[in-house]
Image (cartoon, rainbow, N blue to C red; front, side):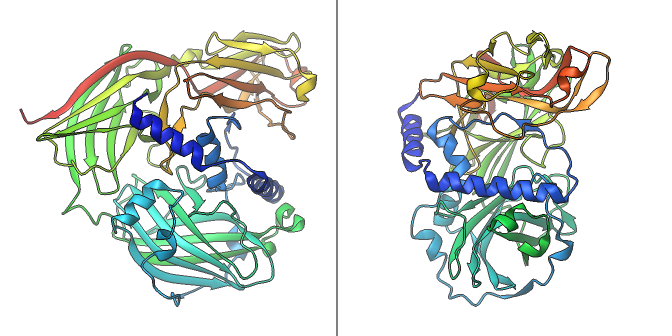
Amino acid sequence: MLEKEERILKQDAQEVHLNAESIQEMKIYHAMRSGINKGKKRSKRRFYSYGAGTVLATAAAVVLIIFSIGLPTGGTDDSGLGGSVQAASTTSWNDFAAYRKQPLTNRVVGDILERNLVKPVRQSATNNGYRMDVDGAVTDGRKVYILFNVHNDTDEEVIPADTKIQFGDFEVPYPHRGAALEMAYDTDSRIQPGQSKDFIYSTNYPASIAYSKDVKFTLILTGTSDQALTSSSNKYRTSMEVSFQLEPDPFKDREEHTLPVNRTLTVDGQKIKVRQVQYTPLNTYVDLEYDPANTKQIFSLLNPVLITTTGSQTEKLVYPGRMTADNSEVYKDHSQATLVFRHTELNQPDSAILKIEGISALEPDRMKFVVDLNKQQVIEAPTDDFEIVTSKKEHHATEAEILLRRKVSKLFYYTDSQGAVQAEYIGAGLADKFTDANGQVHERTNRETALHNFGGTTTSRNGEGFNEMSLFFGSQAADYPQPLTQSVERIWNPILETHSIELFSKK
């Protein structure tokens, strides 16, 4: 790993740590999810075997993003959450001083703020003794960032429970893929009576709608008592919304530059078309399109590096984030994706090169587990490196589930939406349904209680790690005709093959 990248990763690991307070945060969140689940019929959420023990920076993402935007219930029913009143903010304007006084957890937003690109909004909403001040926001037409403060003027502790955002007449639907709410610089999302907390909200601008400068941002708070967390009633929740105007593409005539490419990169016989590179003051976007004739589904590009040269200056952009159909509302299927590199001043390049070390991909007909629960056999698996874990009692597993462990090596890294370096996700994404031997389709049931010291992913700095997962189908699944077939929607399968493609050259 290059010295610069090594330093970034080390800094990420040193800046965050898991402690009792952060564990309590997750307990609060899970209790809140459980309570709301009781009160609404939800659309099924795909279950991914996310890890609790990845590189420390990966674990930090769980701490800093206290919860994902869009509760698993399909969002809260806010029909009874009215009463929010909007007005101009009365807080003393200090040019985002509260956000500048210490490093933001979101490095991307911290850099944008330091370059004075965040536009003041200064609108507030009040409801039931709570006040939300939307201090500022910024967008380049692809990413949206909102900085806001919540003040608790009641005698009850609260935490954020959900958010919604609307652009013009379009409200972004559940599950709000790609959206995140995080503390600006704290690690505790609980807002005590009389206290205030600063937050950062980020999301992707939906590609399916026309740009609109009209934005409506909604925050829903909930109490933290056992009754509030486990109840489905909205009487424990308070909604506040602020409408404001945000120019959808303020940099278009000044600092934005789009470079058409339309060149094809071929890896392991799979064709990847680079459609364009878009440079904005917020990020650098490389838009990809996968050939429909490809024989494998591509999950990610391995270690992509964008090398830009202008005159005698050369800059390497590393560890991009990603926008895919899995993590954003931008794409509806897996035929397209976007690499999101950090901002660069070299946005009028003489040349640009994209270099990768391979892809993670797999043939569609291999993306399944075929298992016999009664015989405790795995008849088919997406890859050949899964091993059955036979010691079930120590992990509090049932006799009818199958525990699997998989060792991996030569891991790669990317940047998450908060600008922190993360190890590639090496787990398996399972479909919501499975099929028995008679062709009957069943809903897959998640475990009611967690396994003990088992599950998730663990990665190390030397590029090695392992993934543990449970094939749990429900308490009645062992009585179904065997074997059972469980589809896989995403899995780590690296194909190492270094390639470079010249995207642009003035020569």
